[in-house]
Length: 556
Image (cartoon, rainbow, N blue to C red; front, side, top):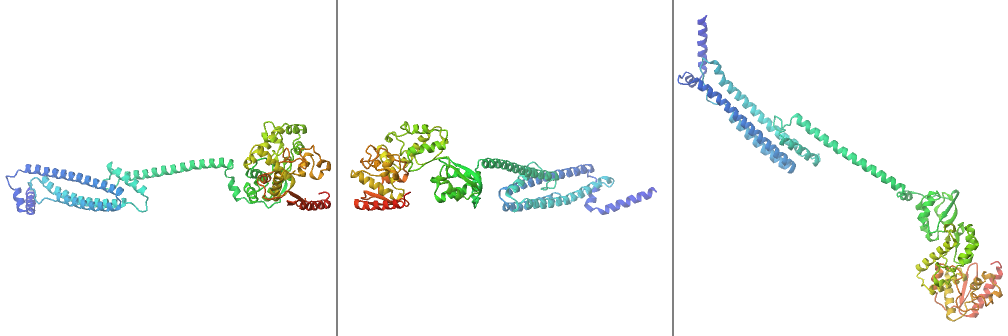
């Protein structure tokens, strides 16, 4: 039994010897070789190779990290072209590293022989070589994988043309932060699952914050806009929108509306109240109707009878008619100062006739200018006034005088006695003719008679002195020398104006029409036709025409 075992051992030894080369066999059987020293040296070589490999791995990882950082910076600052150059540099660096690694781990051609009696030590060299080969193949696979993943990563991280520049820069910045923090995965440029999730969370958080901020800003802007709109709409700031698109009512309207126009009201103010009371469709259509007929200055103060849903043109036609106004004082160019007493009392029952008369006879102290000589005649501005708007009759008269002075200033009428003279001439013009086309000629007749020291002979002046009308004059009135207004006897202008002349009459008094006329006769009181001449014979003919017309119109 023992013999058989020895034979098998010898046979195995022979087989093993046959597997070795002659040099290896001689080395093993060399008695001068110290087996223990060889084994220690062998293990020292293995440790040294492992340290070299670790150092090379560290250097490789550091070089790869630096290249990745540079690539990220290039992507962020230089664009796709610089990134392509960096990829090319990375390919060359990875290839050089792979070749260096293969040379470093290549198996040695020298084989270390050990004693056949120590089978355990015989396995170490073979195992070491096998591990080296496996590590070499693994290293080659890792290098190829790293190269592929780095290039794929750079391609993936390239700036996508379909992404906005802001998103691309944010992603590159996040990747660069991870590189600085050592956030690379175990397989080179591929991020770990944790890092990938962290990047996604950052993007979601940033997107959520951005969306929330935008929504909050929009909410604030909407709130402010709504508040401003409500405030402006409450103040009527958007009323023009309704006006621009409003249509006029066809008329004639229905129902009854009492509408009041106050002194100095503008067309816009009147239109607003008319629209509020549903008389017209809108302020704009009323203002347009006023401007179309140029009736702004003709709008009369007073209370008018109107209807709901009237046509704007119909409303304007009523508001410019002084005869349609109620409860207001109408001062016209032919109105005498004493004639307004009864009107004022009728419009304001709180005042008595004595109060109004006393106000007219107080010489206008503190109200009239010195050139008026204490008389309100001629100094009351024509227009419409609401007696209820004033506390006393004196207050209302003061308002009329103030308006008159403003009008005279606007017409550049000279001040002082000259102003009173112009008002007197203008009042005579208004008392003699009712057609504006004759104002300038009448002014010339007055000027020519004054220049020739002739009595004016105007019946309107004599009638004023007798507190009557022209057609009521008697022969006694015409020959009364005690009447200072009897201009058939007295030469020159009367003591005061005889009515409240309007602006056209005042302009004619300042600018008479050129001519030599000293006579004129209104031959038709219905049409106002007036004829002028500079000789007495022609004047007598015109006078006969007037008498004939008067005979045919006894009530004229």
